[in-house]
Image (cartoon, rainbow, N blue to C red; front, side, top):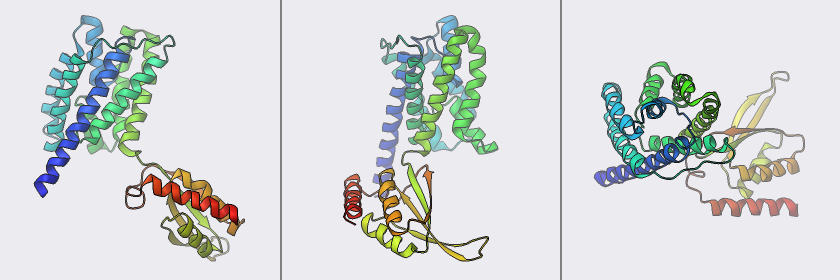
Length: 301
């Protein structure tokens, strides 16, 4: 059973790495190179060599990644290096296979937007498969491990160090467009690593907290945590409701609270990601059904 589970995980990770590598290659060959844009990290360095000496990025990326992997071998776990070798091979192959597709828009700003979306999604998906694209990704992982800098911030710092000299080759205008590419790519990586399941959180302070909790539990079906609080000025004990919900459930819950206690104190905050029963495992159909029922109940009341 354990071996079967490991095999499924390995197939899943390799599948994610394959998909991410395809998106990576599309970003470089379809958006970046045809529009004379730059990139960050090892890809950006490879593009500099391509613009200067016409050396294909697939060869440069593969060779330099082997060198960096030799360094990373001392610092990173064996599983990550294993999947990174696979990612390196996939990327090199797809950079050769996926050629001839070019997107040269009339509005130049569309090129870095497309490049950033595909590049960020590709790197993010590869990392979800426990791999890296080697190069700056390994350096960013080392920075995270030893100086506490998160991966997206580390990648952005490395990218800027590569972009500055490339501006003298691709020109100032394309360098500024590349900044758009890097920013979007960074946000996409951040989203894939920590934002696949964004939610909202509610803090509700009310003297009718039990009535509100009962109504939310019956009509929305969400779990509720009751926190002990105390007012600083009055020194009175306060019971606080804490709830994690989907975006679609915000309005129904606000209506429930306002109907029971118009003077209730509420705060709504963004939650980057939530996992677990009720969020990861509850189907969208069940959620939609519960929200509809809650809205009907509020209207009838």
